[in-house]
Length: 169
Image 1: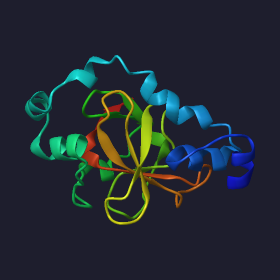
Image 2 (image 1 turned 90 degrees about the vertical axis):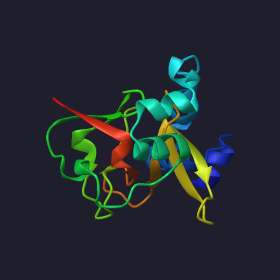
Image 3 (image 1 turned 120 degrees about the vertical axis):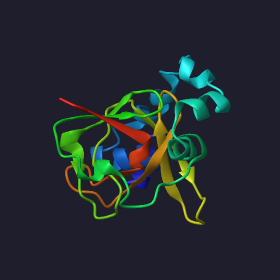
Image 4 (image 1 turned 180 degrees about the vertical axis):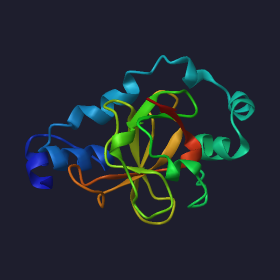
């Protein structure tokens, strides 16, 4: 797959590559356009002090400083109603409840994200390459995406529950 993407002149990394690998290379614009669509969002101009006032201390640490909540601590692990999971920072819809699954990791996990809702970047914080994803509108950190999820995508968006809010249908 990597060679076929390079032959087509695509240079994809992270979730964009993972998504392209699952869709035959059709997702090349998904990652780059996600953040650009919200470039003028007022959430991009909120200061660190304003974020600190808006969010709980743990949500602030996760969303604004790429922290991680302890596994098994989120009440959203047990959320099974129909609805939509939103970014706690700016309320952008990120995941539909039917895409949630129990990954056994202790964090809410999803196999698909709403188109255009997240951006990605390479993360080497623990010494190995991972793909970090964040809200496309406010750039709040949510978690990492891995290639060990269920069908149909094979992806696992491993999300910090404190970075999400849930709205039942």
